[in-house]
Image (tube, rainbow over all chains, first blue to last red):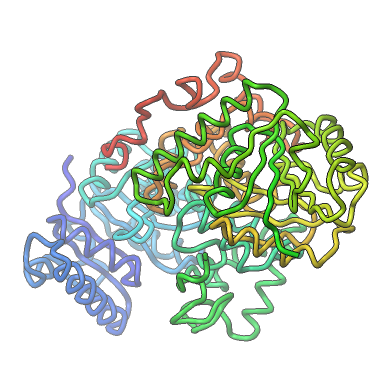
Length: 291
Length: 291
């Protein structure tokens, strides 16, 4: 089978970026959400990204042509009517995702490959309720344009013949496909990133080193533009707290409690103007930070 | 006090690099080791690095002038006679380091700041035997030229007034000083690096993903030139095994056992031509690796 028509369920930041990259790559794309406001946000998001890409000379077609391949819809039936592949990016809530997969599993044609973009849940949680478990797999994008990894993570009942199709599809979207051979919450990258952040959190709450010295150590030794606390500010301290507080070990609990003190002050990171650093000009972006 | 004369104990790779950077920065430097062969190696190492730096236009003086400030010696008394600061980089062996610090603690003038460059041992293990515990501190370099972080890690008996002196000294060597407020094996960076490598090892031994896909995930998402297994190859699998096998958790034990299978085949990483990848042209350096 060849994937030609792609349906994105959930028109948030990530869903919009995936839909846009699919349109740039020549696919016919539908993108579904439940409010006009969500679809308007999605359209504006795509226009902004296209303008940036166009300015940088990264587009082979003009933005209008690319956008003409995207069909924005509030109608679930129309959204998936001819889809060869569905990728779902709704809010990370297990009950919501179950509801969505019950609905779209029924609406989707027999041929459709069903994929979820969940960050920390597992495809086996939704495979059965979709009604087509052998067609179901996780297909997890990062941010599509800057971080171009796509995780392919089957559940035990996924038809193995989907894997090469999804690898090919990922490459066609200018992504680097990686295979997660067994279900693993956080796939590959997030598992490692969490380990790094956990170690940084332990150094901080154990009063071994300051936020700035921990970040400097990482940035200077690896020549990276930010360290673990800068990364946390960009992820959002609320998101990090949700993941960290579910862990059982004492270091994670201490760090979750520390993150909570920021959250209680409304300091969620870059998006609220303050987290471990103050934005829009955080200390770590000043060249003097690492001199 | 002002640091003007620096004495490096141990003329291996790291000791030679520190001595050279000190000479480049204008210090008078003595470098001590116990064999002519070691000193010859050190001299050749410095000449090679100076040639590279000179070629890249990074030197303000000619290499001969810089080398003229380095005094190579087999004589322990002469090595530290006028030293304002000693930095010890002998083999990572607790008994050897104790012996060295007993000897040089006695030989060093009263004024001398005594520093160890140990990777995973702690300054409190050597402070008393040096005879001058308040003058004793860890001062830990990474590779001096590419990774320019220097950790300053006091033990509970270190005179706090040494800290700003060591920070200033670190900056004068073109390093970024970071303060490790409490003794912590692995300081800041190595603690985080080990957490990352541990997570990567667990993904591999748990058969979640391949060496290549784990490295791709890290490289592509963070735009880095290598991933955890490429890093392990450059550190040396024997070194990684020594650190990993001392840990108690089951994931570390499984990864240590896995590393041992490579070591038993003589695959220690880049230095033996093979580790997780084959050198000198490892797969991850091929641009196609992340396409």
